[in-house]
Image (cartoon, rainbow, N blue to C red; front, top):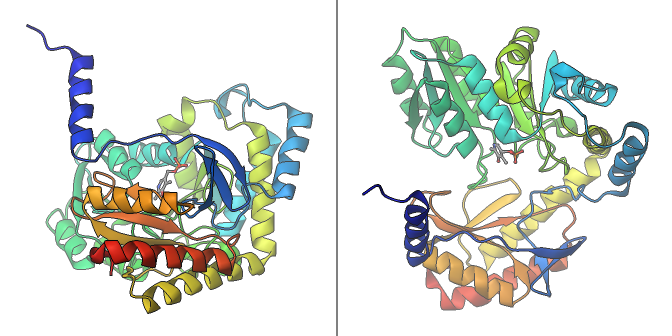
Length: 394
Ligand SMILES: *Cc1c(COP(=O)(O)O)cnc(C)c1O
């Protein structure tokens, strides 16, 4: 008899639940500044990617409202069919200028940007070498493209070198995140650049968690490493994290952007980003570029958390980014600790496989410029409390 697909799916879910791997949507009933309300409980939020506290900034909200009043909300069509408005055009120029690139192209999400770039660039017979910890959208993009995908151990430049040299005759793309989304550490960007130059390989960096956070005027980790368009010809970043809105862009030379406009299917076959979002993003970027104080507050908060946690014996990974994982090992333990923190008034979800490798479940604590030092000190105290019950944390 033919197996039933929905029954198979339900069985897989039951199995996930048994292994403490079931994912769950939590409904947020209200957000107000650093707090959110779930199940009528007001929690301090340490899970947001709104690193600069811009998602609800009055100027950003005002830009969105004004644009909606002028343009309406929906872009009404794909970019190539009348959906590309002045707001999108101005934003693309601003993104190119900010990141020191010739051109930039907007995508509706980061997931789509990565699928679009890898699909446009790669095909059968090519090779795509990626860090093992790269985001799912990068892995999926390479798989869909038909290229041969090779994953090197995390931040292991020698491993990447061996993989590339084994296929020295093939066109190759090396892809890494600039700041790793689950570990918070950084890629060795200069070494990767040297390798790609020596091996004639194209380098792509996904700076989703670096843009707005690192570099002069928040231009990202690639800019901070002084790598220009020749060094990193494909720069991708998202606009829904530190920028606080949503969407993504790819920046690089004219040949790259023109090629994406012709070939990136997730750019061509989708409705352009709603116009007011482009206006909100522009406003947010103006704030980021004009105020180093927000970034200074964020980095002071990161330092406060690290110093306080390490002093109290909480084990942290080496990360200077807003992402500060507390490693717990098993999924069961990560869930239990996350629940203890919830009960104590903190929102810090557990991150489990397959998002992270087996045995590396964790709390993913994220910090924001909006947190106060008392917020951070309270979280550390709560972690210390839980650690008394969970010795693996220290
Ligand atoms: C969040 C993220 C994406 C996806 O971006 P969305 O705009 O949320 O789709 C891509 N790459 C990395 C590294 C990310 O962290």
